[in-house]
Length: 277
Length: 318
Figure 1 (cartoon, rainbow over the protein chains, first blue to last red):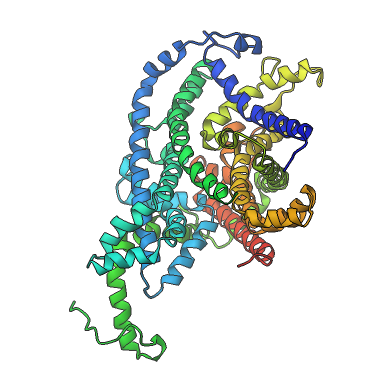
Figure 2: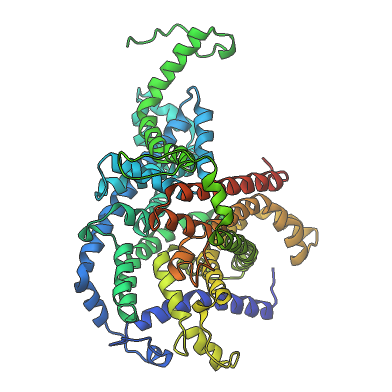
């Protein structure tokens, strides 16, 4: 197929324009972190002429226990991710592999809850955690993140588990393997891309979670990054260089994880298309 | 409990078995699935289903969170209160406006960019996709800081600076101090942050369309526009239903967009339903009232989703 070169140029120009719209704010944010002593809103000319340096990052990293909050978030999001993926996989496996009474009904209830905004559940979730005596602990946070997210992760993983070939399962059954072995040796390894995608959803979701963390965690030293960021912004309202240096530190882990995994997913998706062409 | 005797053959039709046999069989099935299902059911039961039911009950109470304190039932009082609340009117209006404004724009640009990226001659597809998706994975709070910074008052805010340079305005706009300019910022924020999702979903759908159909169309002499109109669009119909439902739900659930940008200001004029629900509960401790608002919002979303699924689902393959 031949394509008009002018059309090509126009398409590329539109695509690059789109990229500029998405990327310019990020670049402007990064440039702002290079501005020194920005105690008020820096002028665009100052921002564009700033020389790259890491001074503001150093100040932010050592100031206000930012390192501590970073580790807190890593712990909270890490455990929540592993828990969400594991229990989601377990529950999805139960729905895909077994028949049992009320299966259809339970699954319908699950889907129904997904249509209701969870803001309705925040207050009762808080009262549950409170009655368990887990306010101001990470256990309380993890219970809400994993328990509250189980419906979504089950629903997501179930779709992939259904594509696992039955022949493989039968070969394990022939060898006398039980349901657990089928789960560990067949379903989990074959669903790696889905589990990885799920893990990214869970990690970025809990890494960025603000409202639940704000209600459950009271102790200042236990705060997670989103809350620390808001407090930081409240304290240094006009020092945008510091605020964005802190922000970039906060978003970097998710972006790095995304870019690493992104390649794998896209390869999978793109190959499917190119095999036929 | 004793193990159930395996008298019934699995191939026997369930309908014909007497109740006791079916019951035993069911029990056996539950024992098998229980280790896998138990924790998931417990988690969903305690942290999703129970809270939703309790939320509905709370909406009829003058709920008091203090232990031992009374929470008397007040009937529909919490619901009636909403209709006299000025803030509720703003919240409903702004939530609906956000949906009406952002869904079509989001949908159009999502499809538009996905189609362009998917054109056969476009290189660096993965790079484009990654860059368009970047705002999605960036923290809401950080993007909110960024938008407040870009739309800052005075001539030092980047947007004002560019508008002044281009001669589009004569003096800097106080974006977040006025109701409608603040709303524009919130809408732009919402679209900028979420349009990448639509692009990625449509891109995946476009790549899933079989090449054979396009080849057949090319042999029949179909040009690019006709192919798009009569092949691509119908092929995308099921995914369009999915995208639209998600966009509407996303727009209706607008919350951090407002909470972190204007926090409802100026004077509650940019408030939306979720930010109001959150603040009524956790700033004003009106848990009953907050729950009543959530129930009304939940019902509305449920009805919209149901109607959309009926309407859009009709023409799909399933």
